[in-house]
Length: 478
Image 1 (cartoon, rainbow, N blue to C red):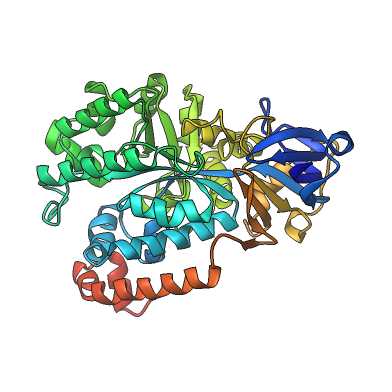
Image 2: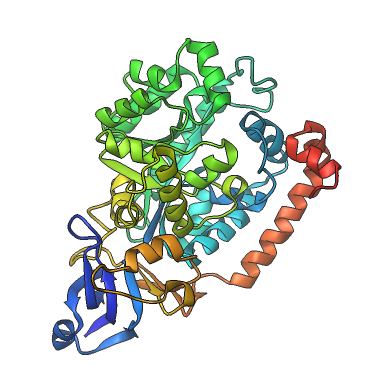
């Protein structure tokens, strides 16, 4: 007797070099582990009974999706920071809200972001942000998902960034407090919730803290055996600051101080030159690309395909924040990543569907340093699984010969609402498209109320900042 048996499915195991397809496949789960994978008749011989049996005929079973760079608490600002020049995005569309966001707002935003992501198949969150201990305790653990988290560390206060063309003012006491909070997060939560919660260190970005604090964080990470998750070369605003302070680019500066190695997860990197992307690959840096967010905020395609072509070993996808790309949906990110990189390189063979699926699963898990635990459907690995109904007009027909079309159809046609079941650590957290660990209506209602409270208080500040979006609002274009 096992706890869960999924049978008669198209099982995309992600074993080997491709998607590792097993047609008429089955997966058996006992407690939190996968105990058998294979053809349905073979598995049923040994595992005839189960507490939960899923007949997945006409459905696909995949490892849970990995969103390796996400800020769920900002989901409350969805649609309030798009269609503006990059130089305005942080200072004119995001900053006006920041003084009015309370810890309870971040929790409600995080619940909404997690709910949205789970319903489109995400099981693991690479989350960095503020108030992370509260979000771990009140969102990630009770929702049943897996999360690799870090508190952001910076030296930025309310008076730090009055002019993007002048050096930011750092406040050492703020940096010390944020470092202390980060270490407390690690001490309290690393390995919690049956191992579903793991922790990293999160220096915010090279332009938001002193070189001294950057190096302290690096040394602490090495001493504790932790990964670092940092924004790198993320736009023109950062580039201005690094030139003002150090007379070079972000990547050259960080490399000069010995920052880059396999212990660093670098998010974005779209401001990097081709040579700098190759440098990151040589140093063994782990890369997370957020194509929708950076396409909307910067109008740039992040260098995912270039990084891999340059020899990059670890790469993943992230949805970033809903105030940047408007959603937390890795299925959407797969399609956009493939499309944008094909057009960037003018090569339709770039990032084929099978590779993008691997980046969203096993390679994403490996980027977070967790590929040995989950990310593929293999005996002994954690049971993080999703079941997707392929019986939809936009995913029909299902063809096996001469070429299986399931992987291309998932990447290029799926929307996310085809996900019916989500299993994390062997526990069913969504069934029949209903999240069992969260009150969906309550989450959305509380998020709506919190968003209205923030935006009503910040409205005057927002319009005074006079962003491109504010100007459009004044003209009645929205």
